[in-house]
Image (tube, rainbow over all chains, first blue to last red; front, side, top):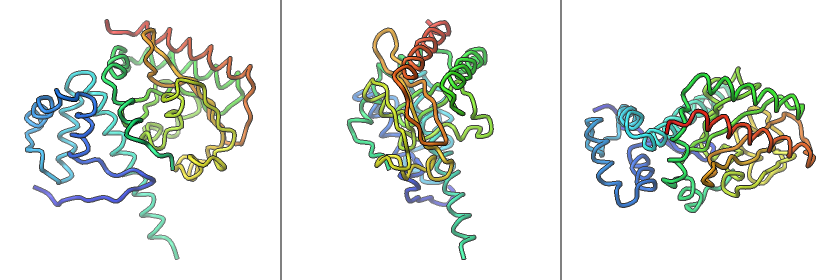
Length: 99
Length: 171
C-alpha cells in the first residue's frame, strides 16, 4: 500500500477518497447501497479502508464499468478528482513563486 | 463560494434523475457534434463567446457540446461547487448572473477568479418525464444584461438540445 493521502479543500472542493465515493453511492441507492458498494469493492479488489492514492483510481475504474447510473457517479467523482488536482497544482505553483 | 446543501446533494443524486440522464448515449461523437452545432448557433445569436450544453451529474457538471471552449479541454467539466448551472437545475427555472464578480455566491468561484468569467445565462433541460438533467447556457467575459428575447432564444435552443438528446436515447 502506498503513502496515505490527506487533502485540504481547494476552492471548496476536497480530493475525493473512498469514503466520499461510498457516501455518493449511498445517496443514490439508499437501502440498496451496501450491496452495490460491496460489489464495487470486490471488482476493484479493495477492502474500503485504503487511503493510498491508487485506491480511488481503482474504485473509479470499477464504477465507470458498472451499471449506467453508477458509471455517471464514477464520472462525477473522476471530474472532482481531476479538478482538485489541477487547481491544487496551480495554487502550489502560485505559492512557490510568491516573493 | 456557492454553498451546496444536503438537500441539493439529495436532489442531484436522485436515482430517477440520473437514470433519465443515463438513457442517452452521451459518448456518441455524432451527438456531441450536433450539440456543438447548437452551441455555436446559440453563441452567435446571443453574441457571446461561449455556449454549451451542461449535464448535471450527482457531484459534477459535464459539458456535452460546446462553442468557445476548445482551449480548456477536460477542465470544462467541474465539481458542482464551481458549476454556474446548479441554480437552474435545482430551481428548474432560467438563471441569469449579470456580473459574477459582484455575485455573493460566485465572486470567488475559480472560473471567475482565474478564467475571467463575468456573465451567465442558462435555461434548464427538462426531459419528457420532468427530470431536470442540465442546462443550455451562455457565458461571457464581460458583465452583461440579457433580454427576455435572448432568454427565449436560449429556451428554443434548449428545446432543440432535448430533441437531439431524445434521438440518442438508448431505449
